[in-house]
Picture (tube, rainbow, N blue to C red):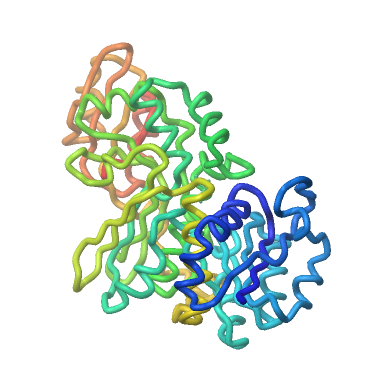
Length: 406
Ligand code: HSE
C-alpha cells in the first residue's frame, strides 16, 4: 500500500484526493500496488465528507508515521511549506509539490537534501499546471543544450487577456471570474503583477541553464497596465497580447524576464487562449518543441501531482540540480536595460509621427486617432528606449503604453 499525506486541502490538495479516488484502479495498476490518502493536514475539519477521518492538525503525526512514504505539499506560501518539505525529506519521505514559490526559492536545497536522503523531490505541477513541462525538460530534452525557454506560464492572466480580447470584458470582471474558477493565487496580485510567471520562468531557467535564478531580482512586469485599447489595436494588427516568461542564452550571458508581449498570430503561442499555458523550448539538437495544455485549475494540477507520485514510487528521484541563486555569478545575468526587443509604444498625442521619428528613427507608424499615436520601434536595448521616451516626454510627447513585440 502506498500511503500518501496531503498538506493543504484547498483547490489543488482536494483535487489530488479526488484523482486518487476517481482513478484508483488505474493508479494501482500503474504502481503495481494500492494507493490511498492516509492523512490530510489542514486547519479545517471537512465534516460530513469522506475525508473527515483523515484530517490531522499536528504535522508530527504525518512526519512520525513510517507508513507515509509520499507527502504531497499543496499549501502555498514559502513557510511552513518549505519547513515541512525539508522535515519530510529528512524523515525519508518523497515530496511532491505544486508550490512555485518554494521551488523557485529553495528548490536547490530541497533537491540536495532529497539526494542525500535517497528520496525524490518532484515538482511537475509547479510550472504549467496540468501541462507536462518540467519532466520533458528534465528527461526528454536532456540530450540538448537549451538555448531558450519562452511561454505563457500563468493561466489567470491568459484567461483575463482572452476575456478582454474576445468579449471586451473589463480587467476587474475577468479577474473576478478567474478567481471564481480557482485559477488565481490566494493573493491574485502575484498573478497580475507577473510574480507567479517569474517564479515559473526562473524554475525553467534553473533547470535549463543550471544557474539558480533569484526570482525576486528578475525583471517582471504584469498586465495591470494593459488597456482594452491596446488589446483592440493588437487584434487589428493580427496579433494578441500575451504575458510571457522568457529565458534565453545571449552569448556567455543569460537573460530572464517577464513582460506582456504583442505576439503575431503567425506564432503558435498567439492562439493559446483562456487558462491554457504554452511553453516553447529551443534545443540545439531538437530545434523548437512547444507544449500546451491547461495551466491552472483543480483537476489539471492534480493530474500532474498524481503523476509525480507514480513516477517517484516507480522510478525514484529526478536527476536535476542547480546552484544556490546566491552563488550565481552576478555577471551572468543581463540587466533588463541591456536586453533588446522591438516595442509598441502609444503616445498621448494625435498625428505626431514626425516628432516621434526625430527621436526614435525608423519607427513604424501603427495608428493615429482618438488622441493617440502608436508606433513600432526598431530593435533596441530597453535602456535606450527609456532614454528616448524621457526625451520625448520633455517635448510634451508622453508614452501611455509600452509593450514589447515578440
Ligand atoms: N495562479 C496560477 C495560474 C496557478 O493562474 O497559472 C497555477 O500555477
